[in-house]
Image (cartoon, rainbow, N blue to C red; front, top):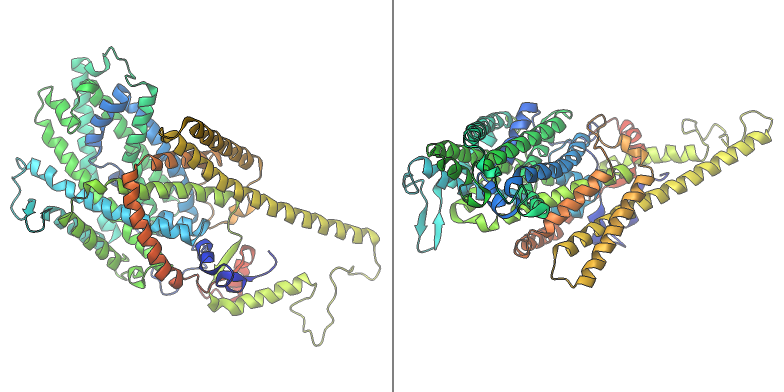
Length: 640
């Protein structure tokens, strides 16, 4: 760490060619490194706002359907335990998100963290996948609102003609004007301001939560009076066994994946609030899911539940058909809240990618009055409204999960990197080359024993290796030599520790993939399958032991913004998180991955022809992290 390194001179554009750009990492935004010309987003959000975003984005209408399907096919009366296990698994990712959001509080969520900890190539793919997730997710949610809204007015054909779905023979499509109009309304709210749009989301989220509380209270009263028929079955509490209950957990895990929307607002709230907002939102969602599932599977035997309308049919079986209206209101408000949660993060992802030069600067502009990325928001709304108007995107809904699970996995890996091999070089813009050269000169003079403050033409430099007094002291010389040897030994050991940690983290990921892939594909020959499982398990266990035994990097204490949330149980917690998310990714199905691969391939083309050559790190000069403050002081803190 004794030499300042220019990335261009060391091969960013030469020996490695364009591949070197895939691993270049950016600096954590700080008080020093605010980019000139970039307006910051408004810090208007408080903990209640964050909770509204988290709960509203997480609790969608799926819970009104999911409980019936999972209870009938997987969990039975143990549905509440499935939700609990899935909630705990989601909490692992939430812990990782909370630490990174505290240390790197800027817009961009998992894309931003990946760019800092892993590299530009992976960050681009994560950001590109998140764009797909929020676009498809928002359009799919909007398409689901009009049928539920029609039920409130008496039936499928009860909506006015300008809102109801219409079939266009010439195009062979069913258009949904209601969905497009709702997307434009939500887009308008998001353009007004983050505080105003979050307030509106809080209102619809409150209505949704009240509907779920009605289900819990009224259902609990019915169950108490009728004796909880669903729990008095000869098949017992686990009709499909513990394996079925765990399979149900993997299915209902996707009911929790909306909380990452909170992390996308990291630039718009105080550093200390975001972990509290994530934890509270996730706890509320888990509690509501469990209570609703306890009530519903107790009212009706799991095998008799309606897979399409489990909650409404459960109340109807007890003579409470009118409850269907309240439940439908809950579903409509849940969809509206989820729609807002889907459209809120994407402009901030686009903003972060445009700030880094990977997308056109059009997306990085922030309105001075509302402090909202209006152009990015309008672009997001226009695309989502077009998709929701023309396309039935329900068959693409599985693609939504890919972006989230990839982000969850990369966030867990980033926590391991932050703790064991945090970036030891920091990129600076070439405009600070004069300050960098000045610090380089002073550092070189200190190494050679010269005083940079002394005029070299009129003064004599003193060799710092000689005693300051005239008389030599052999003991002092020996002590100096021993100290230098110890420092050299420590530097070598630290380098080896970083290499060992880096390779271990990589092999952990390979082991997680091998184990989950072999365990999930029964068509693989038994011998190969068992071998892959064994090798993957050994890599995971060995990696856990190695990372537990070696020290974490001391530089982690000064990485990014300090004093925020610290993820507990590292390395065990991130490793378990990686294993769970990779397992879920592999089990999404070949059809989903085929569709996602097309989108990711398009992203690779966009990056190769635009992002790589327009990156803000293209001409960056990399310097040791230890000299960052000195360089900023030398430049007069010109970027502050």
